[in-house]
Image (tube, each protein chain N blue to C red):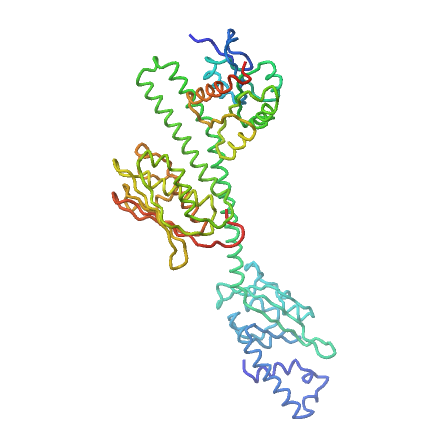
Length: 413
Length: 145
């Protein structure tokens, strides 16, 4: 819309154009020029606004739509009465489906002397097939005596905002759901593993009685079968314990505090003394950093990593494990646990951190496949990483990086 | 052919005067039968499902050892253990707790209530018998009968 147009339209709103003051406009050329100057300034302002502006006269004829408004709606000014606006521009209720009743459109209501705030109108037409959500304020325009001259609507495109809000809502809901689901799962795993011990007790216990009292009737083959049954039940109990232990991990994390990993490593070695004696193994511990962490979980992390390193040693060769640490250039604590054991195919590096994944038969090496999964869980909770470097027969190097400091406040469970 | 063995609230054999008496509290029928079968050939066993009658049982049956399940109706094994251990006449009677609970805090709580030993389910028959024999041996010379 050009300047002349707007001047003409605005002049129609001004008292000077009214029939009751037919000569006002002509009172002085100065007056007219002053008005035109003001109109020019007004036009510049309206044209440069980021918000959309629409003006209508008291009869309901659209007079002006600023460029921002045209861009939002996708259509230019059409001099139509209010009854046609909804259809012509494609105005819908916030549901995006129900056509907006023409007399309820914010500007139409403003023409009925109503002030409308934060109304929502969806515009969908050929130019805007995806639909645009507009937030609209509309006010009546009155002259000095309070007589209604027309109405103005100011609107902005809130499509993106609504999308972000919706995303945020669904993400929040997703997060809450995932959390609830995780807690339920952990609780379930814990209860199941506890309640399943009773039936296993009966399999094992009555199996023991059967062996004691009916060994002769069972015969060697029968006793062998019975042993398989009891072994199976024992192993299941063992796995259930591991499952429960893994599940509990999410439930009771402690607060982060300053932890001396060197001290943690020494304590873990004391616990492992018996096993070291049995295997003739040796663990060398270098200097380790001090960081903010859950002290019990750090202990568990070292316990699991070192036990793991000791366990998978080569036959007839006592295990040698080196634990070392330092600080990375990025300011993270780095802990390395390296062994000279059997190693494994690097293709399985990611799998070993999943619960109950085992790369070997359980009669070769004891264990439930839960230790490294717990390590992974602990490291994740501390916002760190754990990786393994290995090759068959070449030993394994586990590297853990942990932030030196944790965010203040409650530690995540 | 073996004698049929009573499960509920009855002495197992008639001629048991010289045998040591075990009082077992467990509300699970299968567990009651299992424990009776495992221990009834060596000890005089009485099995009950809850601890509401504990004072009467302790006074009448005068057990040499009490085996408690933790999760029982009305009164938990923890509370029963405390009542036994805080009673002047029974405090030296060894208490063995049997439970599928195996968190360190569960075991700690049992110790705190005075339990002399804690066996987690599932256990092997031999472990149970060994544990009981140990506890009875330790208790002998104390207030043993």
